[in-house]
Image (cartoon, rainbow, N blue to C red; front, side, top):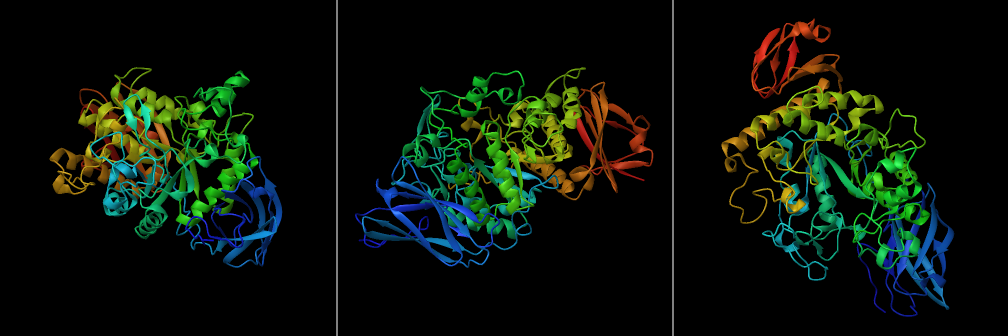
Length: 622
């Protein structure tokens, strides 16, 4: 018999009945964890595997229960790891028909620096740079495609296919991200997507975006694999940058074993015929909605090739919770962004969030909740509402603020429109326990590029950037926005996920360097850089209170204030200059004689005029 050892499963076979392979999830665990009761799922190629009798012999590790499933290839072992247990290989023996097989399950020492070197959390003091690894930079052409994967193509000239960007490419450009004033990087998922291309309206599309999981415990080797991810994490932390991982609990790709070869049918939400989600979050929190609509929302499949995971199944729940903790510990994650948050089982989401926070008290989590209403957004985070179910996640992706940003710069001013939309939206912050924990943004990988949404009007672009970095919350910048990348999601969302120019071999220009950018792109880059870096050192903009004054005559004034700093933000959406005087805002300006506009350095007095279609960010002085 052949001895098989891999990075994913450490397995030693003795006296096999016939050749088989066993994979274990989680692939290892750690000593000294608060979660010391671990459910290890063993997956075999032997359909009679579950008939074996299992034993564990290792100091400090006890097997308390064995679970079998209708699919005889699987067994789940409940292990208790005592505080006295030391790092080493835990031996798990399986006896079947008089034959004994022994498997090794590594127990490792913990990563150092919980809360200081990793799991630090991402808060309002931070600024997040969102990028898609496949489209950012290709540092290693040798990992672009593999013949043993279902999608064997890498073609940077086809927007629907994989382009070859990788984690080393991200690592190579950390200085660029730091220079821009970012403190954190959120990447679209890096977990293996061994899926074939999918036929969509625009053509055959690959899983380059990362949301089609096929093996939770593997970083996609086209990105460089687990070691490349560890290398990037280490490099980021050495450079003072935090790592946000994108989680997907709601679904998997249909080539995941959880769908193709599940331990039992109830690991995936089943329907008599294909049933898609309603995508209406109102069905979850409404007190006058129907039960079937809520079920379709939560249990319906996102799309036909993404099976909906049944998180109410305790084995599935354990699998996902343990994976989240294993990932944080293995790769040094600082925060989590949870994709499709509102589609997940509510009790499960609270459970996984509690488990992560118990193990990593400074870690932060924010959920993606696409909703136009503040009520629908606030429901899925810590809120002040009297509702039957209370979510425990600290923050969410603030889509109401996103939509109001667009309205503020695009719509003509009126009582209901333009800047009034932003004022009304922010006035509803009373529904959040702490709106500073919300992620705010102008665009992302699922929405049209901001520059295109403002009609490529550069003044509107700069107003939007100003709003992003002065509004309460955690600002998130989508890669390339700073160099005026544009496009609508037509004919495909891939149009807003184009390559960063200069990140790929053969690129005609390199816009990571000032010399590769034209004058307007450099101006935009420097504009973002100036505001973002000022914000990093501004207690008022990062943690301060907000005081807004009712918008009037097409302009809007609001203040961000901390004990030792007051910032006055003036947005003029008019086609003409607007006169402003401190006396109209006396409750915030009485102690000040003027201020300095943070981008231009322009000094203002107690009366000044702001030009048309501009936003000024003024640090007041006495």
